[in-house]
Amino acid sequence: MRREHFVPEPARANLRMENDLLKYEVLYLRRRVAALQTELAERPEPVPEPEVVVVPAEPSPRLIAAEKDLMWLLRRLDAPPLGWVARRRSGFRNLRHRWIEGAE
Image (tube, rainbow, N blue to C red):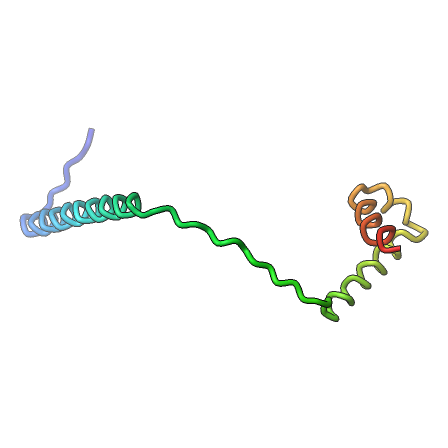
């Protein structure tokens, strides 16, 4: 069972006015959305431009240093005493094959 709350008359008038304003705002926004949807539907589909990747002629010094560091780290992990643990992981084997065995 719902209890009704007493609302004084001036507050009711304010609530009615706010309700009317919100109703008209919702109508305006719905019309605006409908207009934008029809505008978007009438537009032709944009053709995406192909992505251009610029590759420098020679690798940067930071890239060369990072490759050397990676190869050093992989060789270090492959060495005893725990190299056998690293070699059991397929991810490590893939990296070793790609960077150490492929470079030699």
